[in-house]
Amino acid sequence: MHKKRDHIIEVLYLNYRTIKDNLYPILTLLLGFQGANYFYENVLKIGFFCGAFVLIIYSLLSWYCKVFSFDSNRIVVQEGIFVKRKQEISINRVKSVYISDSFVKRILRISNFHIELIGGREVSFVLKNKSISEIKHVIFCEFHYEKQKTFTNKITFFQCLLLATTSFRTFLAAISFTLTLTSLVLVQFKNWFKGENIILENKTTIESFKSIKDYSIDIWISLIPFSFGLFVITIIITSMYMYVRYQGLYIKKRKRHIQISYGLFVKKNFQIPLKEIRSICIIQPLWFQPFHYVQIKIDYIGMDQRINRDFFIHPIIKKNKAAEFIEQYIPFLKDEEITEKANITVLPDYLIKIIWKPALFLLFLYWYPVILYIVLVLPFLLSIGYLQWKHAGLKFNDKYIIHSNYHWLRATKRITLKKYIQHTGIGCSPINERRKVATYHYSVYSEAIREKYSCYGLNNQYKTDFLKYL
Amino acid sequence: MRKIDKKSIVVWLLEDFQYFFIRIIFFGIIYYFFREYILVQKIIFLFSLYFTALFIRDLILDSLRYRNFRYLITEPNVYVHKGGLTIYHETIPIHRIQHVDIEQSVYARFFQLYSLTIYTAGLDHTIEYLSKEQAERWKTYIISLLVNMENKKDA
Image: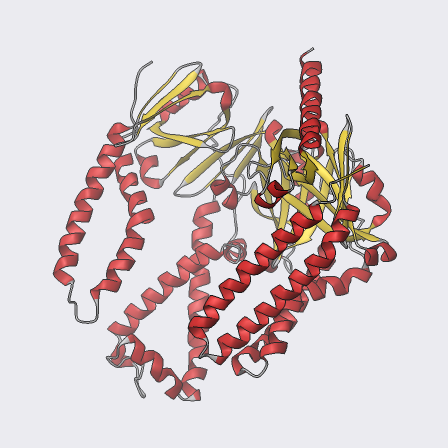
């Protein structure tokens, strides 16, 4: 077996990952030490150069110490600088393979080759495209790979705007970027601003916060269009990121797996074995609902949970086309209408469940003025409770269970294959017995060990069948 | 269907009292350090009231839990009925069981009681509390069913 190393370019990416994972928190701590008078400036400069030197040496050593080899039966990986690790991975433990790359790697004709193992672990290598091709054709020949020549799905700008409302992490990053940019603009062009100029005086942070209560109402009102402008810029930046992330969506169904790829600069290519698919989720976030769009997510055994969080088989599709899409690519699962929904008699239960804690808080602490702001939140919570009741539903047949629910601004419909259901159960209190309703719950095969779903308030006429389901 | 050991009520009561006691100690410490602030006093009072109500509820429900707890282990399935006010009926097919454990908590040790935990790939189900002989017998029985199933599959 010929031993290889990752491509040398990977040293740069190791640097980047180490900075992202470790240096940002350290820098934040160091900035705290900086102080108002730059007391520790020289110490920080020396520390910065030492840190950069250690980082470069660490990345080089990490790259050098990772050695791997392939043959028809196994993959051997040795890595680690101080603690050496050696893994021997049997080829038949490989669940799926996928390829990703970045803009720079595409120019250099290299890619990241990822192998997902049973149990959710993942191993990755950075190789030339030619080497990857050879490995795939010789060792992973059942994972047939074909480079797509044309884009089959284009994401429109409006769809990107909608997608921008779905990722809170991306939105936070964009708002941080927008605020940084805005503060730079304000500092550079401060002479353009007239009036009291309270914001632009040379005050410390604490003094600035203390002086907020002196601001007149005019300043607060003028901040509203300013905040709105910031929000719009943030959404546009997030939309651009979503465009770059999901552009070039390509989906192809093969005999034993589905191939999905997307991404403009960082291209990701997934091959999902059909026999490992456990369930699909049709998700409708809040802002998708008025425009009748949904997202389709897949759960399959062996997928890394970090990747699964942001991975969609289709990130945005019209609701009336979702059923057709699922039938085309995953024919053994079917999107059906759920006829059995939560009874109207349990609507008060849903409302009380969501509102009782803040209401109790309000009741006991009403004398404290700030607490009264909870009253403004109550109608919002009541509407969430209503939507949770409206979307609660369950249907089961001899092939799968379809379960719909509403979880904090997202309507979800999950279709799970029967063979992955681990147990079924019914819960019923004396009050619900009289109302002829029950809670249906079930657990599914999961690498997270515990994955249980329940639906409260359905008619109890199906309880015997549900208990005998498996 | 079979019942669990009656001394389970005492074990549950001791566990409930332990959780209640830890919470009261925790809030007591916070009260001691921040008692000058009226808002903190009020919030601690609120939480103490809440956890006391939970404790009283658990005291009342433990006897109901014992009365409702039933289990049956047969070749196709394990059936468990449990709960206080809300009764849960669960069906666990034998072929979904991954493994079985016997555990003994601190308080269960005083009464020679054990809990039998059945693990599937999606959730774990606990039958508590049983005598040592019963727990061992059921564990052996479930494992023998699993082994027979494997042998039938191989054959």
